[in-house]
Image (cartoon, rainbow over all chains, first blue to last red; front, side):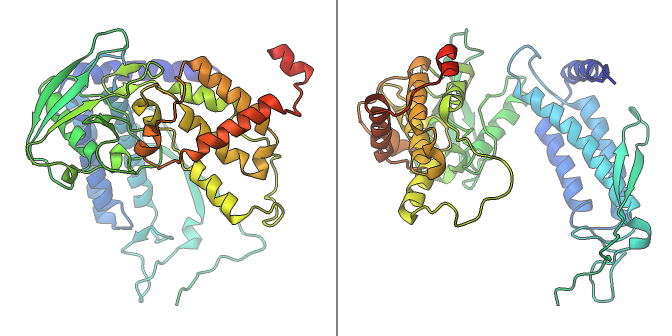
Length: 167
Length: 259
């Protein structure tokens, strides 16, 4: 465990060198906005399995675009706000992909996350407590590998799960 | 809208800076000033030129990160807003806009329009805090505070520490900033415990950082995005005199040892 920081440090160093060496044609802001549009359109308050599947493809394309065509000027030895931003957007791409993965596997509507396929006749969110009463924590499995979902069951001993009605 | 921008470019603290002129066309009137700079940077990056570095974070006027001297005024031509709340409709089409960093020796330029304001952090560290016991939330009516005191303290507390007061002051004095912090805490019972030592140590740190003296010109208050009043400086002076002239406060051995 103690050498984790070292791995992360060398990984970050490699990423920074890689980002600075690409010298493509897309600015960090352009890629950031494309990513934001995908998340907004397909992984917002209201989403569908079809939309999320499409978004999964689209986000991989954005990831490819970032790592093959990003344009970040300057060096790592000075204040370089483009580089700072690039590092963050690289993280956002990973996070966005994971959010889509998680949203896609959850076949229910819960709280503000409305899957259009799962709704009551009155158009309210339809939860599935039998299958999805857990919190998911995704575990990184190395570059290019599918993350593993660890589940923490939500067990209610004294209070029963119920549905709130605002009507 | 089209603009001619004269922007201060400086590679780092050691390098000599200079103004560079850029032409920017097709900017929407409802774009914020920072969106306009974002646009400029996109063009610069596409043309293999280093983007203009400027500080920004919340972009809604509460974090105190943005700065910029615009046409000779901190936070631009409008009253009581930060640079990030300024919009291009405040300018005329084809205007020339001059953009500089905060100018003060105590705020050295890091790059282009970004300056180092950590002197403010050190002033806060020297006394801009209160000692409270952590734990449960205290009862709402346990510590009565009159409405006028609460309002006045809140006015002082609205200081976001952007440094416009220092930048506009001919003496580069930080009095309005320090006064806002001291006045905020001195007026509330929670701040009374350290009131005297706070005034002494924050003023000492302010002097140590090299900020200039206050000559009551009042430019700071005029340009302050949160319209902090000069009366807080009067309260700071009172606190300071009280601490110096009539202090009950005797430093304990440890504090003397720390010097």
